[in-house]
Image (tube, rainbow, N blue to C red; front, side):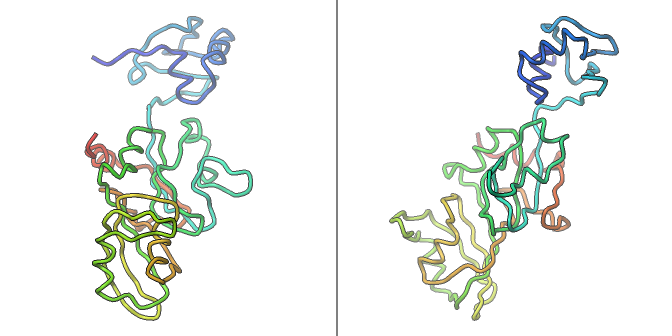
Length: 242
């Protein structure tokens, strides 16, 4: 049996105002349920079955949204920033009402997979080092990277502030003046990947996240583009241990 929810709480949770504001909207006759104007803000209904309209606009209820973005360079991974354009600025109003946020940050000059959601519990599971969720990055670094570095990454590197990273996996694609590698980590300290390479006297010149746990960046998404996750992708994410 589906849980019934109060109409004022439901509309407020979807981002249309505070509970107090929604109660005022209901008093003004701006809310309809199944075609009828309501005036009882405590009315309970099934949001997946009953038809809800606010100010003559039908509301398609869902509690959470999950968006995959190919983050471009130059944008900040936050909900708002007084000095810079953020990834949230790329979203249309239909998603903004859910008050989404980036699940983890990518540096301003880093590209790639960014999950944007309003599901705080899922975001916590993805980001917590205790959950052991792999984050895979493709990096191009200035300088030769040889096989000996794999063990150093696996043993943990000491960063500039004295912090020793958890074991990380390094895969060398090409070793040259500009080396190409994949690196897998399970944590996300400030500028971590860049600082890891700096600790071995190399410098990251290009960085792109390509996966987080079971979620892989859709290679059809150009930088700045996004799409909703499929039901299969959402299910895979929710298999991460609670």
